[in-house]
Length: 318
Length: 318
Image (tube, rainbow over all chains, first blue to last red; front, side, top):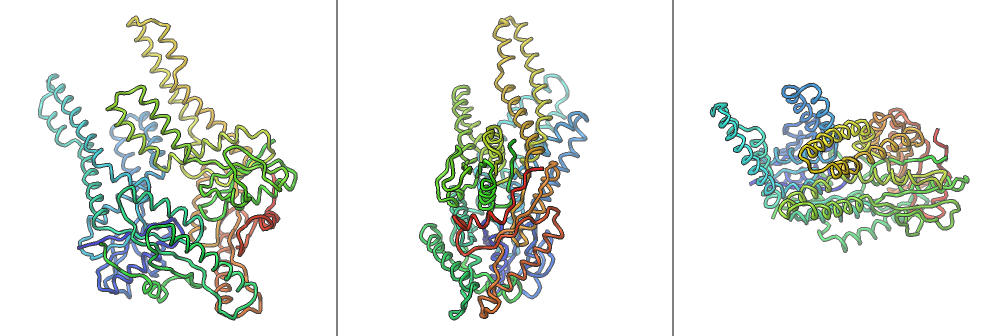
């Protein structure tokens, strides 16, 4: 049985690194593991010092570990391109210009990126049978989570379209255009097909996210990060999804006990402020803090990654 | 003459603090200054240790300085509420439910937040005559910048709607409904009025942003921040807006030269990595680095704010 773990949190908190470390820990514990990164800066490639693409590839020096990087923005761009081509075949040049601008604007909204990201999730989740665990370095967010309520809504929409289509076919028949063509329009209608495919995808995604997935949030010990995590937790809760743990990343390390000077004073001051925030996180946010990860002087790759992995547990999804 | 300065950059880089410090510096240099914050964490209130609301208020202990905090999300929620009320008066209960869900989904997209943010900008810019300088702690981003091309597009849309409206009025007249009512529909059409108002607002905003505004980007010395700044600079450039300076914030301070120990080693390692990134920023990003601000052990408020202000210049918009 596959289970899915999503690492949520704002850009820059260290999700990709924590997700990679979790993947390393899962593989070490004997699970066939796939790490899926959607990070636009392609940092999974940096973490493992190996290039990944949009199909799973074995990670060198780690048995049972695979990784892939997907780019939702490229999907958005491809989709726009495809629609434009279809339009060119169906509309007059004047209409193409006009519709084209509307399409472009729609594709440049953040909503388009979120929708494409969700499609990428679904695609990976539908093709994950080779793995025991799939780890995502991001999580569906506010707007996308509402899409989980979409199947019900799409159902009504499809029904209404189907009804209209039937009426128009009757009109065609009355006009004696010939019922062979009319029937083809009902059965092979590309819009209805597409809506039903989306409905099935969203139903599938809702099932998986509610029953086979777990969510961990990564945050940093600063006010903004706490504030945003609180909001993200609320929106997951509204969608009936539960975050089972928080990872506090980028904690400032203590200087040696006998260190003096402005550097040591700076670090001690920071550490003490971060401790207060950790207290806030523990007392005000519901999920337990399952790992505290200190900032390292060096980039987290190689041995450091293994050290971080050791700090993370690999509990299965309950 | 008012001039406007926008501080762009991703959440968490320190835009609000830098914008507040810039406001302090402008006021100190004799300009009547308004600082406008859209930060959801209300950190302008934290920076000045004073509560602000959605109308300008004098900042205590700083002559000529005013501040306000606006909440685009509240605008989005109000707008949804308003539309729902209007719907209740015009549609059947079954239709209200259906349309209501569509409206809710549209209002929960990030695009709705961006559009509301833009409306807030326009509102402040239209009512800024009392000030020599208005400082915003955020900048229009990707999707919103495309809205600057909207007036032209809206013009066509308004014309087409007007044309349709004229035709339907002629039909009304033919049906002898009486031309008094029909004419009223043409002149007072709420949709056409609304579109024309938006068109005027966007024209005004485009004028101001191109001719009376300047943009500064705030970034941190890490890869993600550099990557995102590069993308943001491109989208401003596409909209014919120029970023005239970069502020690199949250640089790690050096320890004392004679400090030893793991704390000092950690800081030195960080400082050296950040220097490399500063080099990248200087060589690969076009706008000049106009300020480098070190992380302080304490929160930036009071005297620290004045110290940061001293590091920023207050050049007028050219």
